[in-house]
Image (tube, rainbow, N blue to C red; front, side, top):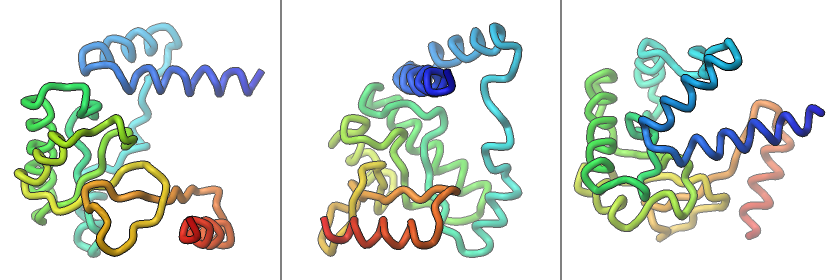
Length: 168
């Protein structure tokens, strides 16, 4: 029973990710009304004071859009707004130059050459995907791969992940 609930939640998340902003808001409002609980949890996101503290401590802050659309599924105008506005807001809030980006969802189909061109024109120097792998010298800085590290991972788990990824 728990596994079927987990599968249902994963299916709902996958579905919501491909909706445009109005459809997503409508779906989440309906969900909230049906289950009687907020569909989002405010403590899952950093507040501006926390972001500022991280930036002041030297943590690189990158942007990720304003409304989390799949950039390959929206118009060039909408994608440009999402990319530029998220950068502008973060620079204003942190007082730091923002030049790195994380693609919403981050799979190969979630961004395009047009997206990369928009990022370059907006002053970004690199962007990360959610595709697993190791980045070697000379790799495409707008298609950086990553290795997932989770709260449940031990130091040994993390070391093994990095070692295995480096062999691929």
